[in-house]
Amino acid sequence: MKIKGEFPNPSLTWPFLWDLKILEKGELLCSSGVGQIFSKKNDVWTIIDVPGIDKESIRGVVKDKNGVIWAATDGQGISRYKDGQWVNFKKGSNSLPTDDWICSVLDKTGNVWFGSWSDGLVKYDGNTWKLYTESSSPTTGLASNSVNGIFVDKKNTIWVYSYGDITTIKGTTIKKYSLDNLIDFGIRINDICQDKSGKYYIATSKGIVSSNGTTFNLESASFGNIEVGSIAVDSSGVLWYCETFKGLHRWDKGVKNYFAGTLDNLIPSQTFSIKIDSVNRKLLIGNKGAQVIFIDDSEFTSSTKEQNLQANFNLKVSPNPTSGLVYFEMDDHDNFGIDVVNIYGQKVNCNFVNKTLDLSNLCSGIYIVQIKDLNRNVSKLVKLQKI
Image (cartoon, rainbow, N blue to C red):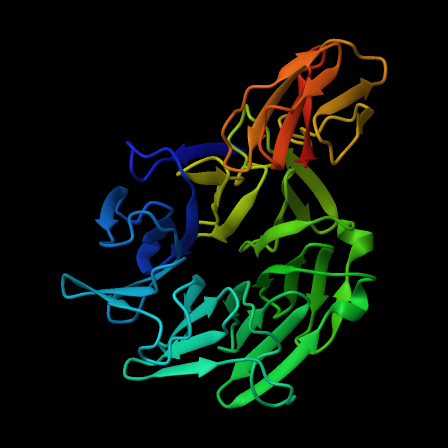
């Protein structure tokens, strides 16, 4: 399996890329957290500056059927790049309920859709804007005003997903589904994909859910009850899914392989998006900074020794959450090292003495600790919460 990374802007290694789209003829489109959009054509990256939002994240980016680029920003509304000019649409204009947007997609008839953190969904058809918001009616409105993402299926049905709820929009027909009955408590829907047969795979905080479009099943036996951040199916029918704060899984007709995301390789431990291009490469963006990760598994075999990189050593970590000190115990192994990064993928300095890690000097939040078994050159990632 071949892996490489590319920085669209060589001078920008941080912060993250937030959105990735694969367009016609293999063009790539990426958004970033520093007010820039990146376009790749014929192996050449072009940097597009979005004025007025240099301190805001561009969470969603899309190019419509007329070649117009749209940027959905977190805090500065929606910006449009047309005929060499930028126009910014803010709250209160064109039915926009907010300036805080998280995602954008283009459907098969040319409509552009934008999802917000907590104020619903809008559609732009080239002339007018339409706002969709939550409604208690089963046939009108969204199941929730909180939009985590939008998926367009093979029949141009729009899937709007949130915390346990899915709304499908097909023309004027709206249907709502809840996944809460599959999980004892709480579920966040993170991503959706569809295979050649039309079967849906839904990435959630509690595992992978399959669907025929009307019924839903939690696939714990096949995939486990793990937090899945993103998911895609390639042209060979192989399912790829990213376990949050862990790494990448490859599932081929029941044969599973795992690629740990560590500080020493290019596999993200937290993947924001995984896409499949026309030559069946896997493209990832995540907490490896402002780069796109390209994976070519055309020569993959399940016995390849570079795979299955997860360490199988026993490890105990306590307490978690912690106010400062964390104690590590690893059976039969004493020679190990530790690296600590924040949620932005940046290394932080912590004292580590006698298998005790001191997080007292760090701010409250989530940190990823990589524990390396130096005897066997394997490692594990642990998510710690500093309170």
